[in-house]
Image (cartoon, rainbow, N blue to C red; front, side, top):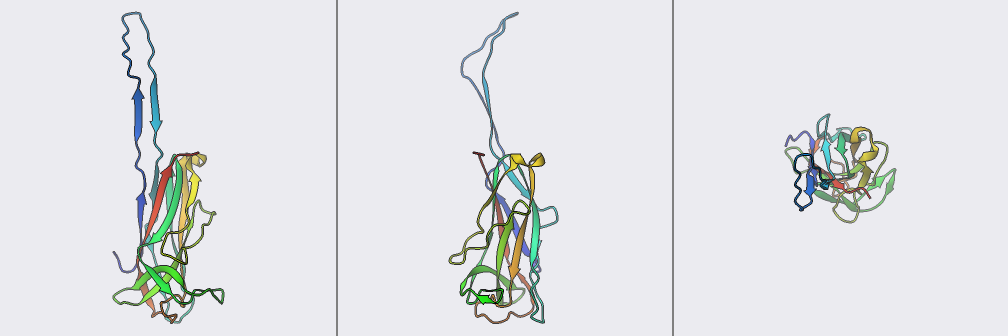
Length: 200
């Protein structure tokens, strides 16, 4: 993996399939005769993900301890199902001070990013927006895990396509000891999962 990026890996829970069933009774029709046979067709739910603008997430810590720029990657979901999207880091950090808006919410788990060529690490939070404009929560604070699932009936979308976005945020205080991280580019891997389910 390119050490300059926080890569996104996509996985789909179901692959497309088509099932056709024909009744077991034998149907014979001679010249001028006609008969009927019942055929059942069932299309299984499918949902596919793609990243039209690439799957790179940048996490760059500036040298002057100014705000760490947030990063994100856009994706498109295509399908005929109830599509559910989550995102999860491949590794986690236990940080001592989760400071948001000047308030210290105490220790918690965050995704872990490593500075290229070093062992320095910083925590980051994730948030999925699916479809665009509908926001889910961040990573669970008390145990390593994924973002809360966001679901959408893809049959309600034009052409069965809906855009989404994965947000990544970080802060200078989100380190294992609470100290400021060294400047540079930090990398890790995020897995974005789309699952296809039957529409109730």
